[in-house]
Image (cartoon, rainbow, N blue to C red):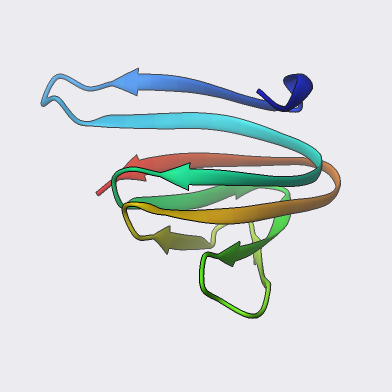
Length: 89
């Protein structure tokens, strides 16, 4: 995806839940969601605009945001890497 600038690995848990761990390199990307998601930023920083929002919001390590199901969001990384854990709600 995205010429290798976004890498995502899936974790399947014994209880059937699923998370993804990922890295986002500098750039701007758009993702669609099927299920609601919570994105926890674990390293680096990014700006996010959830579908329907007029403005971008900044997030740094230790912060999180949620995206509704059947929606989308844009994520932008100014430089370096942004690392995340995505939990499906």
